[in-house]
Structure formats: C-alpha cells, structure tokens
Length: 141
Image 1: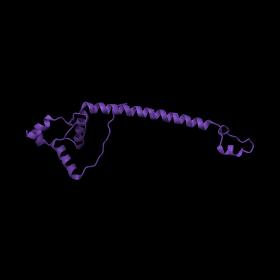
Image 2: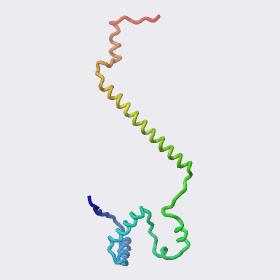
Image 3: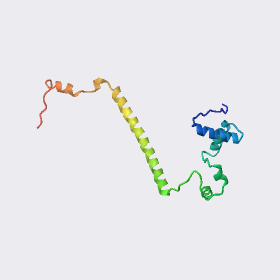
Image 4: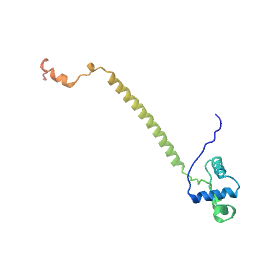
C-alpha cells in the first residue's frame, strides 16, 4: 500500500478564518499550505509544538528567556518510591486480572458440567418427600 493523503475538515469562526487567510497571504502560500506546514511541524516534533506570537519570538523579553529555559511540555520529577509503588500496583492489578480470568474459566467449566448432566442424575428434594410411606422410617437411638 502506498502513502495516501488524508483530508481533515473542521470549522472556525469568521474572524479566525480571516486571520488565517491574512497569514497565508503574507507568506504568499495557500491556506491549505498553512495547515499542512503546521501539521508537519506537529508530527515532526511529536506533538510538542507551541504557537508563539511573532513579537514574543523576536523580542528578547525576560519572559522569553524564562520560558526558553523550561522544556515544553513541562516535566515533573516524581519520587522513585511513587514510581515503584505505581509499578507494584500495576503488577498486582495484572495478577488480579489473571486470577479473575481463571475464576471465570472455572465457573464456565462448572456451568457446562451442570448443563451436561442429565435430569435423571439430579435428585429433587420433593421426590424424596413423597417416597416416605414406602420405606421404613429411620430411628435414632
């Protein structure tokens, strides 16, 4: 199979559409090319794209240097004990799922065995009560 292009369709309000069209005209490209470039950039950077106004990009403001030192998306350090506990709980959950599957299989097997038994093999308590006159009563003592 070849590499096929797919079409993405969405709606924007009129003001956003006009802004996008102006951006395309400034760059002397089609509106579709603006979106293709954005999607290509998004895919190339594994979704780690941030849209920044041009004046913030060119200006050397203090907020830019602070944000430039931070990675995007932001990362948080997690204690090793938390990671270990999370891994332990994942393993325990996996083990419990396996046990649950085994129990389900066992119950299914027992249900099938009960269904396969013939009705003659099952003794109903009502049938036993009706036969008391024919047999000798039991005596204790």
